[in-house]
Length: 107
Image (cartoon, rainbow, N blue to C red; front, side, top):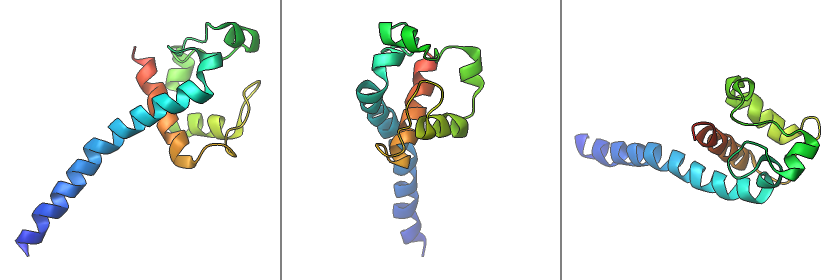
């Protein structure tokens, strides 16, 4: 029985390490394709479009304090001038975007 535990434990550990890295990489690609025009490459929303639409700056304390669940809801349903992405992105894609936004906040 103990011989079965090692492969399972290894698979779980690989999954825990791989998932956040994949989410960040996938999130970066999704961000570039769907969000960068308004929010800018650094998430500061200092693009011409971002300024025109008053896109939130991801470094703003209010955005940082927003929960991952709430950010996911905003991406999914839209808010203010931001369109809804629920018909274009899967729930996993939205989670990847949230993970990437958290990375941008720390830069």
